[in-house]
Image (cartoon, rainbow, N blue to C red; front, side, top):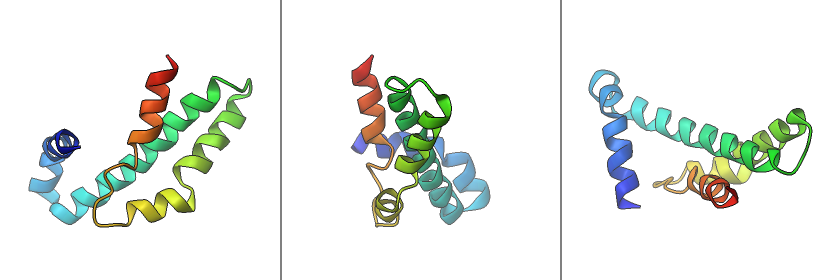
Length: 91
């Protein structure tokens, strides 16, 4: 997990230096939820034929109350990690 913090810090450096750390943190959390929803879409897409159903499944997972509540904590480290590892394991 420490590598993920370093990668996130380097990726958010332009936003942090120009727009401030609060904006950078909010952007990172929002992107983590969106990445989680996208990876869930990819995982569901393997099992259903309809892309609309897969998109709905991804949205329900990525922006569910559980994921949003987890992202509000002091360290939202795992918000986008679980579906990404699931998709990587499916290939």
